Image (tube, rainbow, N blue to C red; front, top):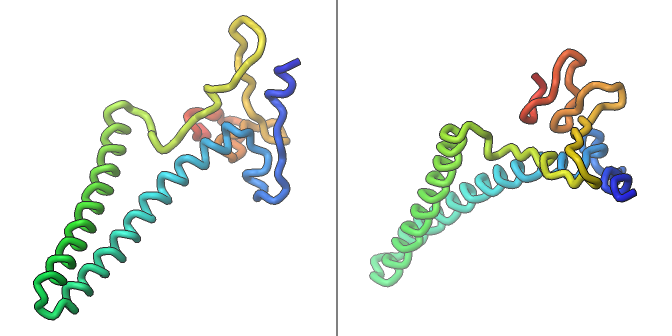
Amino acid sequence: MIQKYLTQRIINPILPANLRNLSGAQFLSLLIPAIVSMLLVVGFVAFTFYFLYGGIRYITSGGDKGATQAAKDTLTTALIGVVLLIALFGIINLLEIFFGFNITYFDLDQLKIIGGGGNPTPTPYLCSDGRPLCAGVCCDPSEVCFGGFCQ
């Protein structure tokens, strides 16, 4: 009985068609990489504005030692921030290469809660016409979904 409730889906009519019929795990598999990418972009935009702000403060300091030092501190903080962002991006890519997996793709279907005992085989997600559903995309009939990609 509990299996019936765990496999039900909530369909939100406001979402676009490619996201409307996804399970929670499939939706999170698409949402988490999007959030990681968005945070990197927001970090670089913040660096740009913070660096420009420090540069303008330096130019307008007018020789005042306190204002010049404050502007230099702002520029230093911005540079440290962008170095950390670049290092984080490099570490993510290094981990992907070293361990052989894509850290920005999360396959949360492995975390399904399956009621009952034994070792059941998970049922694949299918499109309305029976083709495999892979990361929100219907694969060709001759393809299978593996690692979030139609292959």
